[in-house]
Image 1 (spheres, rainbow, N blue to C red):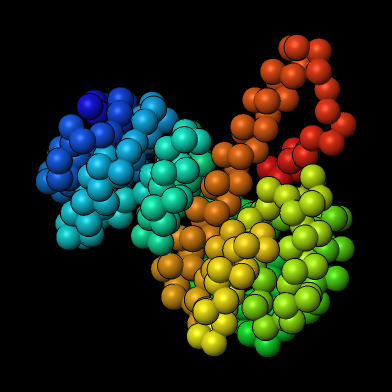
Image 2: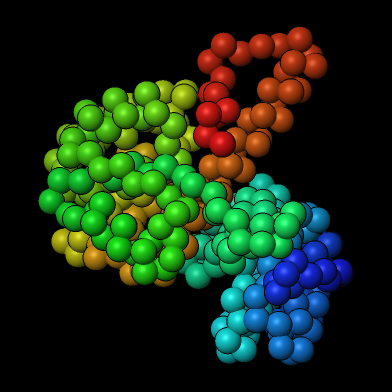
Length: 280
C-alpha cells in the first residue's frame, strides 16, 4: 500500500509517496486525488520511496494521471528507483507522463527552484539530431519552443552518421535522434559503433521514421535502437519520450556508479567501465 506526506514549493504541491503499488490499489491513488480535489493544479509526485510497482499498481498511476487532466492540473513524476522506472518504460507510459530524475528538475519544469522557490533555469541537455531527408532539427526546435522547453535542451544537427560518431566521441550527449532515411547499411553501422563503444552504449537512440518506414520498426530495434518516434512529431509525445529516455539514461548511470563502488570496495577495477561524469 501507499502512504503520502505533502509539502509546498511555491505554488507547487509535492506528494511524497512511500510503499508499494500492487493489486491492493484500485482506481486512482487516493493520496494523490486528495490534492486534486482541493484544487491544487501543479503537482509533483515524488516516488523515491516507492520500492515496487506491478502492472496493477501502474494502472492506478495511469488512472490518477487521467484524473489530473480532468481537473485541469499539471502532474509530473520524479525520483523513480530503477526497477520502478523500468516498469514505466516497458509499459510505454512515457508517451503521456513526464518523468524526471530528481525533484529539483521536476520543480524546474514549472519554472521554480527548489531552494529559493523563485524562477530558476531548467536543466540543459544535449541532443544530437542526425538527419538526411527529414527536418528533424527544425521540428525538434519548434516543439521545444511551443512547449516552452527551449532552455531545457541544446540540439546539434549533423548530416551524416560519420559526423555524428565524431561528435559523440568528442562531446557529451544525452540522446541521439536518428533519421530513418539513411540507408540500412549506414544505420546498421552507426548503431553497431554506438552499442559496442563502452563510452557510448548507454546513450539512448530514437529513430525518427516517416509513415513508409514505420513497418521497419522491428529492424531498427533489433539493430540497437531504443525506440521509434513517428515523424512528423506529435509535440507532446516527442517531448515526453525524449524526457523519459534521458531519465532512463541517468538511472542506468546510477546503477553503473553503484557497481563501480562495490567493485572498489572489493578491490576490483575495470578499465573499460563507461564514464558519464561529463553528462551533468
